[in-house]
Image (cartoon, rainbow, N blue to C red):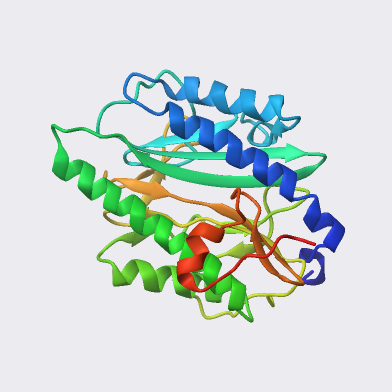
Length: 274
């Protein structure tokens, strides 16, 4: 079972194209997020980028789901269904997106806080949440680059979040392996666990995705049977990248530069997949 999670070098190379296409789709969505835009309009933007780039939206391949993105707003954490919801000033918006190219997958998520000069404290609080969540993601990726076992990633994520204040780290939703399927083994925890997890060695490819709230970690599923919301109504943020471990180091497949800009301050230099 453990042997099956490691991919061949040629397979890792095939992970790059869907990763880049996922990044391009999220770039386009990020540029379009503003008051007055609906989450369905964002979905259409992402779908066009992916299909024009020769890929297909892998979220739409999940049974029962037919959209390109998940759009989760304010107290919604993940799996929000795009629709007629109109974004407003001050909203915190998490967008999860993935592309499949030639049978291989990319998966990534961003969080954007919409400016609102009438609510500076709310915006600052939500931006702080997003920044800490994103920072924890990059600490997890940096930990992966030097880890002997996968669950060191969760240690690094939790340590960083805890060092920056009081936040809730979701435990019921975690990261995962990625490859031929968008969701594969192994599980990638966003918090410390006793088990060491599988060995980190060339061929491992995972999606690391901390989901963090300003309150507690309890959640519920909305009536649409997809959207996950915080039980206490607190705001949430979600950041994610797909990362490949290879013979020369690591490469963030869903970052245009492989993660170089964010990892350099952490002492890590990503290396393109040979």
